[in-house]
Image 1 (tube, rainbow, N blue to C red):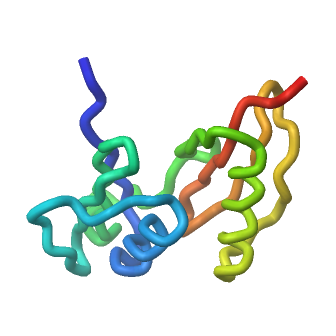
Image 2: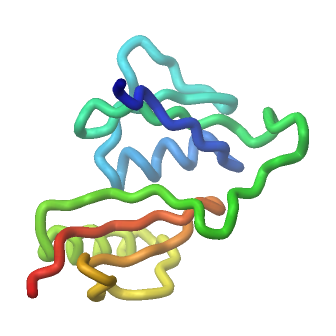
Length: 124
């Protein structure tokens, strides 16, 4: 079985599309026209990411659990540092710098109430 997609609810779909395209290498899915309600993106590895406006949370469940996060695995520490710098230079709020975390090297940050992990294997 293959995981097909992940649906994330966001406050501003257009802004989130820009974020995922600019900093995390996503592209608009073929045949999909972005709009302010829903957009479908392809990740660098072909993974589908659906960004849906949180107004569609009809039961009011618009917050993620504290420990919920999405993680991106990069090839090496230099790429982790470059990604951190690009986010920083782009004005994305970062509360920490890359560091050793258990057996990985990376950092966490929040974007639109989504906790995001950027990591790679730690050199020991």
